Image 1 (cartoon, rainbow, N blue to C red):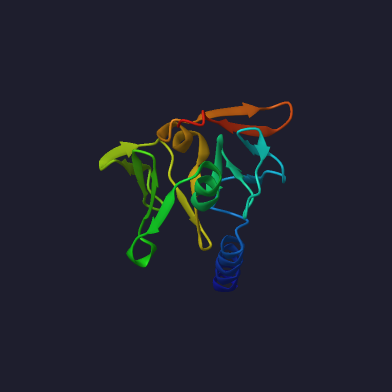
Image 2 (image 1 turned 135 degrees about the horizontal axis):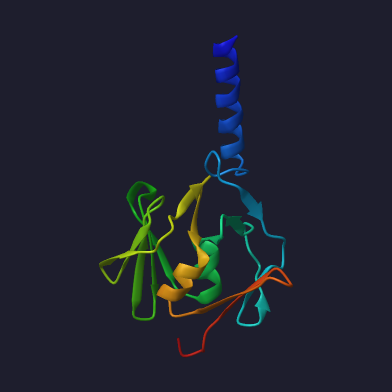
Length: 151
């Protein structure tokens, strides 16, 4: 009976992780509703919803770059993703607390997360790397990301 319960828990956890309903055992996740993210005054059209994990908001790196502008490059075997935006080159390594900014290893304090076939990044630290302003409106439950057009 113990082996059957362990097997069932393992299968259920695997199913939940594959469909993206959980990220890590014991870590609470919340999906933000559509319309919760705004870029430079425009409601974001996201492929995947933003996830709140702990006190951090996670967005797919592709969605972030698509809205702020930049060129994406995928590394071999999905081992990294790079974005060139202006003079800034950022290399994201899934499931790591650091990224490389113009070749310099930078600790972001929070890991990027591979969920399904997507790489989610903590939005606030990545906004800071790109020189963007991040603001959370707890009353409206909205995230505002902004920048000057020169950025």
